[in-house]
Image (tube, rainbow, N blue to C red; front, side, top):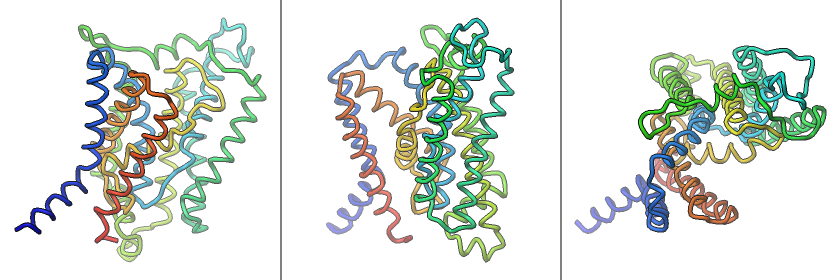
Length: 336
């Protein structure tokens, strides 16, 4: 009986330990600053989470296939800078391209998504056909993309690109007011992306292939799944999500530099793991990803709200990542 209780306790800790830690952190934040629980803060958290959800959905698909993507943050930054230079106001005296007229927002979305898809395509081809591990592949492309982004940033003046077209500012910063609560347009974009990924993962053959590859690549191959092609597709799709997220982030912040997107990939990976997407492969849900992002953003925002030093925040976030992955490894030890 005693051993059964111990077993159940260990199982509960493996399943919910990370949530207990995060709940304790949240309680500390609320106790220190009760004003944290307000509609304004909740609206800000939801807005900040929205772009992170889009980025995390891209990372999640890769993690499900037992991969990872360290280049996500730098891809976000490149897309943000490209979009920023394309969508400056015509009246901006510091306009990067003075002769460039009014560019339609859909055209810029298409442009940055194509760039993101191409970078993702390169990642996928290297992983799938050259058999380079995702960690090393995306580490290399992370450095390359940052170099390209920095060269582009230098070529356009090496100063923050701002002064956006009002259309773009409204597109990224607009909101609907519901009483005392502001629901940003970004939340709707994140909801659309989430529905798209849910349908993709649960209602298409491609989605079933992603989980089959993550569960057992060899078995998937024997079952007739073209593992290489599907891997290339999932990395390319992730690049599209990073690019769209980067464009929205530039609009939300109101400016862009070559350093935008720094560490975003780690936040996205951590949010995915906290949300139940397993590095063991083959396990993950859209709802889990959204939950993980919301929890992580809540903690980030809360720690800043009560005045915790950014350096301590790095330590806390790093500890959460290690704990989440450790619990995930324990949970799926038998599967491995």
